[in-house]
Structure formats: C-alpha cells, structure tokens
Image 1 (cartoon, one colour):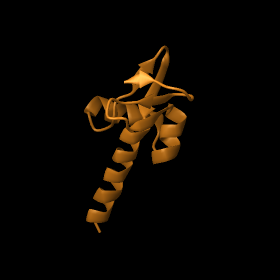
Image 2: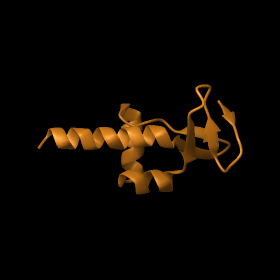
Image 3: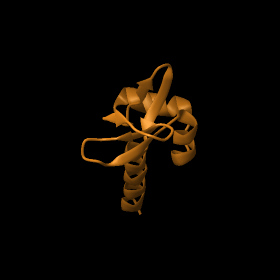
Image 4: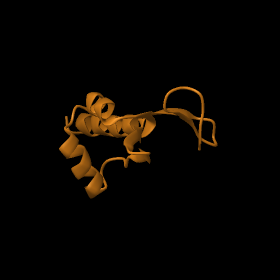
Length: 78
C-alpha cells in the first residue's frame, strides 16, 4: 500500500483505490455515534482505524462493506 496523489488517497497492490476518511465522514456515512464506533471496534464488529500521525482514519471501502452488511441484515429481518 502506498500513498498516491490526492488527499488521503491510497492504492493497494491490486490497484483498487479507496479513500481514508475521518471519524466525521464515518459517522455521516453510517449514522452512529463515536462511542458506538469505538465500542464496536473493541468487540471486533467494526473495521479498525488506521493511524496516520495523530489522526485516526478508516478505509472507505471497509466502511462501505460494513454499511452494506447492515443493510443486508436489515433486509433479512423483514
């Protein structure tokens, strides 16, 4: 994984691009509180953050997969 051009843009060896997003963007994407995010990380049910200096950042693709799994589980309950 290497840092490429663009703010917080990363590229993997498989050439799949994703953004690194901060806690505000994570919360806006999945609409849960900061405390719930960190509790779920401790429980192993939420993607772990990456540290970039003092900043905590999450991979946007992992957050999207998490969101999709919530929607899938929600659909299965109906």
